[in-house]
Length: 382
Image (cartoon, rainbow, N blue to C red; front, side, top):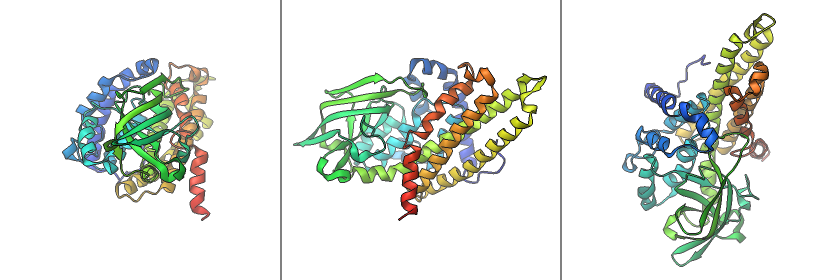
């Protein structure tokens, strides 16, 4: 698939990539089907990933991390996609939730949680979506009411990745409902606190190896020191992190595109119809050539976004473009590639069928394609 150099990554990143590929081949791929059946991954793979240095690698050394740049996170996320792996929820943990703590939490919270997140002892979920508030964070209703040195939290979250395994939740709450977007605050909630309850592990169309849950909060008391940033700063914190979160989705999507194309090229060389391999038909070769070219173009764009993320120059509009374009390309490739398999593509014994059901979420999660278009257009029509 790769036809041109990728200067964004140096020799040290490629050495890291080799280590990541060996880890995925040994600890993820052999167990992925079982995780899909179980609807959740084992905690053991989290500990192994931590022991290998693959979790929160950008955390400073004082917190147990490698102090590496975002490119290492991107390599890990891309390689999971290239292996066709949609679980475990490492990206939610390392590329998303961890940044709330790294960038805005107190030193006390950083020292308390980051070392455990790095070694895989503590798994983190990001509590944003609610039944009546998906991409529109201003509409959340989960409340955190100050009572002395504590917050009392009540509400519900849904579609929360890592929800069944999470030891802590980085939770978006309304501390001042009358203040709109300026009334939101992020608070760390430990999942062993009285009043917290996990709902069912939601039955999804795809991403079956990644647990996704409803979470309930009934008079959950947490100390004010669990707050991330200042009260009312939540929306600013979320916006600060959104670009990198959406980039992480795009990075994984590029990996999935390459995975599906490689699988399909190999399959069409072997599948026979009308006395010759499917790969010998011009229709097959032209369609795959077009998708390969589009994937290559998206790879260049995403690599540039990775560079911008490393220098803190990636804006939310550019990240929205990447998330929208690559997510929709992943869905297109899943649909086109499955067609080359014929009836076999509809059978779950083939990886392309799993990739197909996993790809539809790319137009929804992390902000739907329609929301991405709205974000992009706001800048264009100022």
